[in-house]
Figure 1 (cartoon, rainbow, N blue to C red):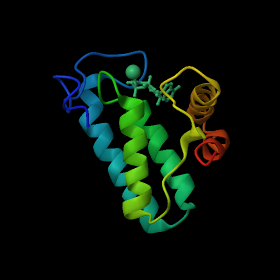
Figure 2 (tube, helix red, strand yellow):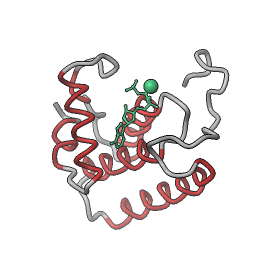
Figure 3 (tube, protein in one colour):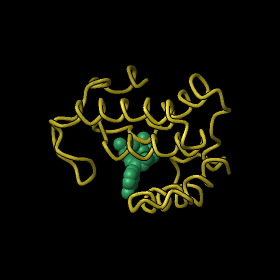
Figure 4 (cartoon, rainbow, N blue to C red):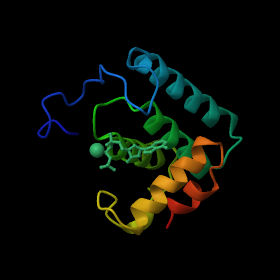
Length: 128
Ligand SMILES: Nc1ncnc2c1ncn2[C@@H]1O[C@H](COP(=O)(O)OP(=O)(O)OP(=O)(O)O)[C@@H](O)[C@H]1O
Ligand SMILES: [Mg+2]
């Protein structure tokens, strides 16, 4: 998605950041996330929105790329919703999240809540 923006687009990061685990674990962490998501869908234990929110949070937390992780993970989550879960995509606060503002603030705060297993704020935010 960033092929015309960054030369490294599509390649995982090769340095550690203050978010996400060690860079060499990215492929394994992504494989585990996809396996888990498939299992969540087969078990039908969670509502589709909750499943998608958990997927989004795990994906941004793995932080596969040097930049663009938020935008990539929001697109992936919307594709999961529309193509697999057959639900409308999220509205993500209905504002430009790349600008510092109220929606951006709520988005980051709700990710912090999800860091400690509280998915409520993110669940509400994505349909605002
Ligand atoms: N505490 C957190 N837990 C999980 N994910 C987080 C946390 N804080 C920030 N993030 C995610 O990291 C993203 C920022 O990473 P990056 O700069 O790679 O992505 P981006 O698409 O360029 O983001 P943006 O344009 O929103 O700054 C945020 O948009 C958010 O999705
Ligand atoms: Mg960025």
